[in-house]
Amino acid sequence: MTTWGQLKSEVVEELNLADEAFVTPTEMLGYCRDAIRFAEAEIHKLAIEDRYFESMTGLPLANLKRDYALPSNIYGNKITRMVYVNQNIIYTIERLTNLRRYEDAAYDSLNSVSQSYRYMIVNNDKNVGPRIRLTPTPREAAAVYTLNCTGAQDQPTLTTADVDAALVVADMVVSAAAGVPSNTSVVSVSESLATYTITLSEALEASLLGLDVVFSQPLVQLWFIRQAYVPEADVDIIDIPEFQTFIKQYVKVECIKKEKLNTMLPVELGKLEVVQNQMIATLTEMVPDQDDEIEKDLDIYRWSS
Image (cartoon, rainbow, N blue to C red):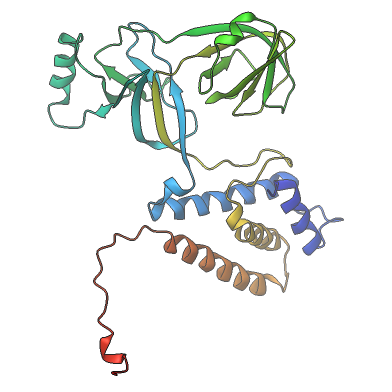
């Protein structure tokens, strides 16, 4: 997959910017982010986010805790589904959206013994932001294991000699005071010579040396639409690889705009329009067919025997 560093090098080479200073690396990175946001907006405009950005994270429940944070990278609070999974008990956690949702939430709390969970979005504190509120308030808690772990920055693995690592399983939610990205989960666990290697869904943001890491059983699967990732450094992957041609051309045009009297601007703007239209056409073709069109009768064009 293409990284921002590779794409930037192509722009620098094609525009002969190696010895120029009128565009800084920070400015070029900003142009890249703008291009990604433009492509992201087109994807959302056509309602095909699930083709690119649908994600899942676990939501560990805590006893008597009713409010839970949304994923930090969620787009517009777009939750696509919440599913309760506890051994053989599986059901959709419905959202309370009707006019009587407040009364329904109060009723759920009064009948918490047999009532399945439902949820609503609340925003009680501007400093905290929106929260998922479960009704009734959970009277159960997820299994939680705290292990002393070691791991290297930019690597998606942890090692530990803690015997409780044998209880850690795939899809558990992983968190720590530092070094572990949000929405990280366990991919797999292996053991060799009493040392456990835990593979994560995300690479570590910083090295861990004997740090406590928390592994929690997710009783709730939270499916959501995430934001497009924007690069922070040269090693970061371009999140929408199909449209890297558009992203590169967008960056080239913005760079040329900064150079006064550059006669290539009209030509490069024309190229940008072409790749932009190609991108939008590609996205439009991905809009699901509702399978409700009647086929034309073409029998009149067939040769009769």
